[in-house]
Length: 404
Ligand code: NAD
Ligand code: USQ
Image (cartoon, rainbow, N blue to C red; front, side, top):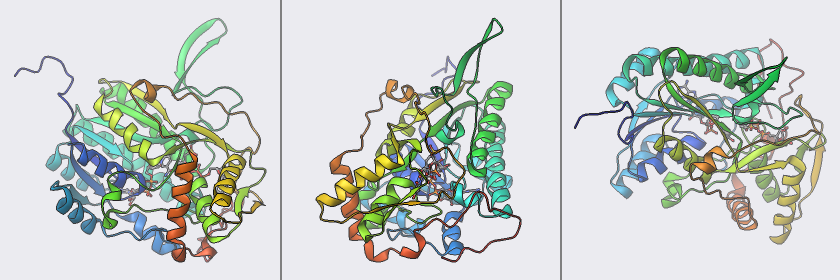
C-alpha cells in the first residue's frame, strides 16, 4: 500500500540502548511482551562501574545472555543483543543498519550524580559518554533511519528548583511587551544532571535543523523493583541499587530500614523531587513510542507521578517499617551535595496522563512489598556501602579510589 503521510505505520522495531540497566531491562521486557521487536544495545559498563567501586546490586542479577535465554524459553520471544559502546560510531552504525529501528529508547548513559562528582576523570567521563553517545544516536538516525523516533531519557533535575512552577519543557514569557514560548530555564546541579541539559540542547537543535522526531522524558527518581515481566522468573530479576553512589532515595531508605541502618536524610531534608514507580517508567516509554513525535518536533514530557520531600519519604518508610515490626531511626547526615534544602517545588506532569498513563501511586501496600523484598535479600547488603562517600565541594583533579 502507498504510504500517504510521513507518519510511519505503527512503530514495531524498538532499539533499547542501556537495556541491561535498571530502567532499560524492565522496559525491554515490557515492550517485547507487548509485541514489539526489541533489540538491546549495551556496553555493560555499568557492571564494570560496580566492580570498580566495589558495590553490587541488592538482588543477584544474571548475565545479559542468560537473561535473554530465559526470556526466550519462557515466552518464545527473542530479543536481539548488541554489546558495544554507542560512543563508538562504527559500532552504532552497524547496529542501526542491521536492526533498522522505528524507535530508539535511549537509557544508555552514566546516570549517577555522585559518580559524576567523584573526581575530574569521572566528571569528564560522564559528560563525554552521555553527550557524545547521544550525538552519535542523532547522527545515526539522520544517516540511516530518518523517520526513527528518538525517545530519550532526560531528568527532572535539568530544571533544578526554581521559585516558580516548573512547566513541561517550555515556558511562555512576556518581556518588554513581547511574548515568546522558550525552553524552560535549566539549572542542573551536578556534572551528571548537566550532561542531560547538554543532550536536550543537542536534540532540540537537530529536530529543528534536520527534522529529527524526538521525545525528551524528564524522568523523576524511580523506585520499586517488580514489573510484570521481571517477576516471571528469578533469572529475569532486575538490579536494585542501595549504595551511596548509585542508590536513589526511596530504594535506599527501604534497604536501610530492612538492615536496621538509620535512614540517611541529607541536610534538612526539605529537598523535594518528582518520583515514580518503575512500573510507570515502562508504561510511559510505551506511551511515548506508540504515539511518536512529528518530524521536526521536540516533545518534552515530565515523567513522574508524585512529589515528595526527603523528610516525607523517611516518614513513610518509618511508618511502613513499624508495621512490619522494624525499629526505624533517621539521621540527618551533613549534606554531601550542594542543593537547596528548603524550597518551593511545583512541577507540571500532565502530558503523559493525557496520553493515557494510569499511575501506580506510592501506597502502603507497595512500601510493604518493597520492604519485604529488601528484607528477603538483606544478607546481601554491605552496610559499609550505605553512607555517602562523594562530596560536591571536595571534588578535585586527583584520581580517587572509593574505599568504603
Ligand atoms: P543504569 O545504570 O541501571 O543503566 C544504564 C545502562 O546504560 C547500563 O546498563 C550501562 O551499561 C549502559 N550504558 C551506559 N553508557 C553506555 C554507552 N556509552 N554505550 C552503551 N551502553 C551504555 O541506569 P538506570 O537507572 O536504568 O537509568 C537509565 C536512564 O534513565 C539514564 O539515562 C538515567 O539518567 C535515566 N533516569 C534514571 C532514573 C532513576 O531513578 N534510575 C531517574 C531519572 C532518569
Ligand atoms: N538524598 C538523601 N538521602 C539519601 C539519598 C538522597 O537525602 O540517602 C537526597 C539527595 O540529596 C537529593 C534527593 O534525595 O536531594 C534525590 O537524590 P537521589 O540520589 O535519589 O536522586 P538524584 O541524584 O537526583 O538522581 C536520580 C537518578 C538520576 C535521575 C534523577 C532524577 O540517579 O539518574 O536523573 O534521580 S531527578 O532527581 O528528578 O533529577
